[in-house]
Length: 142
Image 1 (spheres, rainbow, N blue to C red):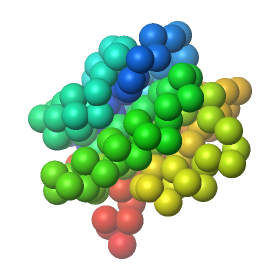
Image 2: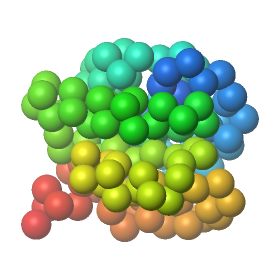
Image 3: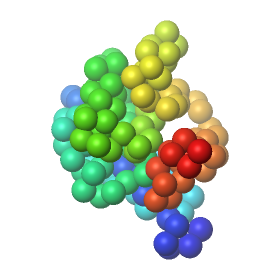
Image 4: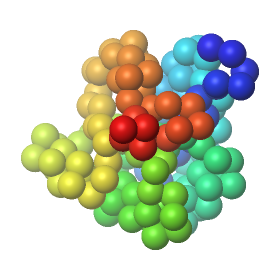
């Protein structure tokens, strides 16, 4: 991947969840895949995440939540991105998420949900197939 086509990914931990081992592993996997990674750290508000995503002109926002607040937090990030005209930024999520919540998250605009145990290469492969550097989601190219 050449520098001008490097995918820009924002990795964030919204809410009060302070468990960051998994999200750091994901950030490293994205970095090792050649992506430019911006990691915001823990305890971010949806507003902070959206503001950073827009300022950094990212192609994808990757959210992690283990606290059980994923429905509100992930949906709020997707809603605010759309509200601010940045709905073309792909939003994915991961963490401890009940299977029955996944359709609700996808309805709200979360493009993919990765559960614990998902191989890192599968996450990177999904990203390569669904997010275009500078073009945001593949849907924007269709």
